[in-house]
Image (cartoon, rainbow, N blue to C red; front, side, top):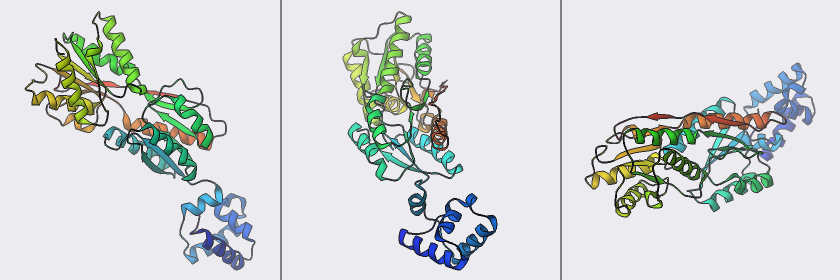
Length: 341
């Protein structure tokens, strides 16, 4: 147990030491490293602590031991329930292990994200779970080395040799979506993607092109529209772009997340386009609202809770094991068919 305030911590330890007839160092060990104190002495000290009614203080604990038992999670937005579920998965696991979670949002700005990471060594956290804006690991590596805070990446490329990561099978999910649309006879398939610099966008778009090419179906630049992963209206605007710029408008849309997909779905309805008779739509993530919009959204289920849990587990392995190996954890996805296609 660790006790309130820096100044009162010293006074309390001296008071306890005087009453127990032991040194201040012995009291400190009893509070912070109890296994190093003889049982009888330890019990006497802890009984005095209990009688005086001291309360735990995480800040004092951090100053005494160099550990705060706090983990930082950096996400690009709090407006997407995918990241809320990811945070919940991490938090549930961390609490079970005696840790707490502090959440930071970069609001999708790379500069803000990097500033948050740089400042982590001033915020007294033991480790970092980075489910950031999705930029490439090379963008983060110098800063992570500088602040010397152990980190685990979520939903980044798994090929960085220095950092453990947890990620979903993007290629399998994208392949499922495109192959399903092809099986339904669609040849004019439009794509609504997010920020083109983000890892997720690059990985999914590359897979779309490969699957369509294998099927003998071309994908022109006009059939791809870009938006903001966090904004419904961005999906709506992207759909309008695909409709107005193509002489043969798409009969199906694959959106790279559910927010973009739901935005496109709402825009299509406002234009009088029937879903799925005139336009089929598939999203990605399976956020809770995907099942409750009208019509309900077909999507690729991404295990966001498990992503968070696994990231927290890997990070605690690094914190609690010397020379813990770098690990890559791949989680499967599945196609969830609903009313939109």
